[in-house]
Image (cartoon, rainbow, N blue to C red; front, side, top):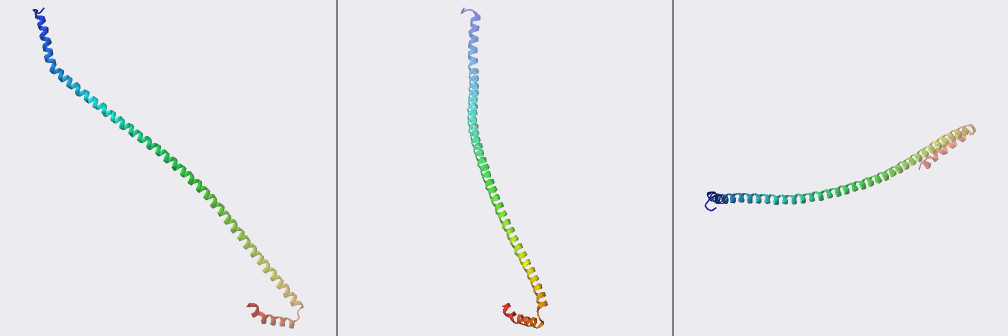
Length: 160
């Protein structure tokens, strides 16, 4: 078997493949190592990006919860303000009604006083006219002149 040419051709072929494959193996192994390192760095970067995305997501969730709390606070404040405004409006309405009622009572009292004054004035005029007619009918002319003179003399005392 050592003397057969096919054996030595096979051995030479193996040596050739071994010698030729060694630099190719280094090239292939280097390329695979580079690719492996690149994949590893991509995986590390993806992990970092995922961690950043999760942190950002958590931050936005926190902001959303804060915004919801703030919206609830604003809504509660608005409800309180609306209730306070409603109560104030009701109080103002009651006060306005009382003022108007008081004004109406005062106007009625004024109208009543004015009507009483007019009635008294009319009664006084009627009484004066009746008295004048009665005096004119039953009083003698000298007696009437004396009463007029006495009334004129007492006028300054009455006016003061």
